[in-house]
Length: 402
Length: 165
Image (cartoon, rainbow over all chains, first blue to last red; front, side, top):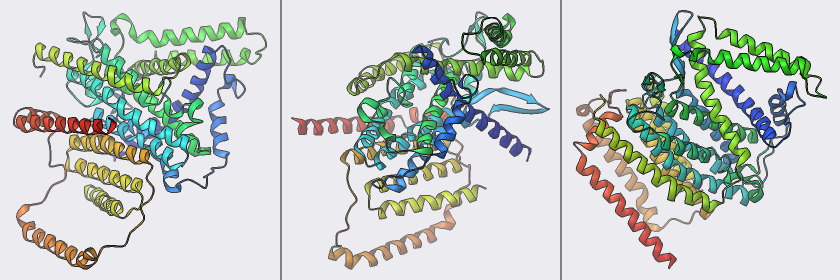
């Protein structure tokens, strides 16, 4: 019974946190893009547009859920459900932190630890294409159909380099369970170089990490690989005919896929919750310093040097500064420290990768379709295979691990 | 718990299989087939073969069926219209299916006591064991199969080339 209660509680927490992150990821994306393009971004709803996601959800939910007369109704309604289901389900195998003790109960930070975790995520991502493909087909519209076709072709093609890039670190780490994989990456070379897969001997996996990242962009249909919804060619691509919550479902699926893929990259290549340098050299104080620096900056800008014409900043900036300082103090409490510090490292790495996704969207133009296909089949795929072969040789030369 | 899950997904697999044959539209059939694959994967999971379940999903539902759906969408085939059945099928259909089902039931009933029950979670081999046996005991069949697949790919390329020229 205890197990069920804890699992239920953990599921509720993870689901809540995941949904909030989804909503705010979109806010962050709009803000970052805006600042890249020298705009302000969402600004009106709440302090600095912080309630914008809520407003968007209310707007989408109160719109009419319109089903066009020319669509195949069953598949048209089914497609967004499939997209969201496959996008949300893979979060359950991702380990967020080590096993910790909370109120005398020992539990893993993460929902499920199955011994085929990596394969599970691969399987779910490989069936994830059905949502988009079906949505495009069922809409009975040439733009949607082209979007759906492009997305299925693209996802089949990029799955190969992605899976092969994943196989190379698995050779070093020798397990398929994501929790064991992260534990294998604990420790340091020479006392300060982390044993993450990207640095791990005998063959550092930097190449396969880059291949994985590029394929991840394509798998999540993000710029520069967002051919399925290329606005200038296909109107809205596969979701042209969707409105209201059905449209929101596709949107949610895209952001959920982004989070899952970055979590996978963090766990497999960047050592999950393992810190960047040993705690003897003070890595535990990184979150405290970062949060305090943020708080100090907010106080400074709010109280002493507010931007002209932004009256709310005088109130909102110090308020957020106080919240940041409070969070920083939480990291200093000895009871919470073993839980919060690993979580911080995991979230920091995932956040940096997510920022990279947004950054690339603000920087690179879209590929042409033939460039996209040539790139994966003629460049990414061979490089991934060579990388796998070299890794296999290195591991074989080093000798049996267990 | 195991039994409930087994019954749910066994029924789902059979229902999807029936729907696969009955569906008028190719996409409907393809999706039913994906349903069959998915239910089979969960049945494998119940037997304790996680690796095979994952491979079932990745290879069949994720790769082969995506290709099927892709081709169906690309050709944009419409719903089939039922044509009248030919006279041999009308004449022989029902007797043959009855004989077939009767034979199946008879054989199952004869063999059932001697075969023993399959236990849930009895198949306790992970990816490591499967990999090891593929590269030691079954190395020759494994390699021969991969060469066979290579030949099939070459054949496909040759056939496709001819049409282009």
